[in-house]
Length: 383
Image (cartoon, rainbow, N blue to C red; front, side, top):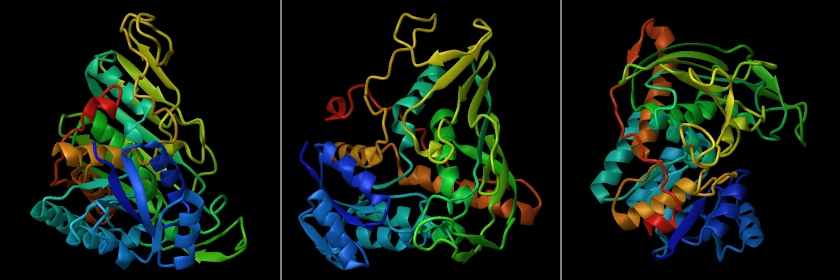
């Protein structure tokens, strides 16, 4: 396919891994990068060999750009996405999709009107670990799914991030920061969510940065930092979830799927970055095995014939969703990490946060397509 030309808006810390991977994806070419801080843009352009460092406005007026990669802070996601779409460009954003439900619907409607695609992180579900889980479910290894649980107990971001302020402002908090990884995986495995209930609390009104040049700086906390949720899927599967910045440590398994005949357990080997990984261990226990079995295994080693992942994305492959969006644009199909799924996940999280005030379960109005697994030998197989 033709090279898909990318304009990056937002040159902060997260942009490094995207730029590293985009260099490895032959179908993508980052031709410009922009930030409100022009020196920051120039530094990223020099480091990664990007031809043009500029302002965001210059990105939107560049006729050579096919798609904007939106890596701004959450509060700016909607504005950047609107600007890209109004400029006639596809857009792929970091999570969360938006910080306001009405803005999310406006973006999807605008994209549909203009015939453009919207994609959104997380794309971790496209990695080898999560694709193997989907394969196990589709092959019926644990029977029909009945339940799911996700637990991410962390002590927040101020111990490892030198500028963690936005995690505790509008658009931040553990649910909006960590929840998309797990809820997106749940939708990929189990389909749309029909209703949720939640409880949450703000344990501390202030938090202190514990690393870097601003160590000792006191930040205000504007969002709830310990969130519990109950989830019901359209299929009838039920689930539970905890996302927290207030827990020192835990031995709780991070992600499990329960079926009529077995359990899939996805442990979290990295307590800080585990939610972000594309690769890692999977454990399966069924009625027949009566013990935990490590996955993936080569074809023929077990009675359910689970093959090794063949697409090779068993590393931190952030940007894989952007690569899929590029192929989707050429093939005139929906991207797997779609704006519609990101909107659905955001509506779910928004409802979880509103549920305590409502004092009841909150129905979810939106639905989204369950993404297809990533094809073997992607992207060659979808060229």
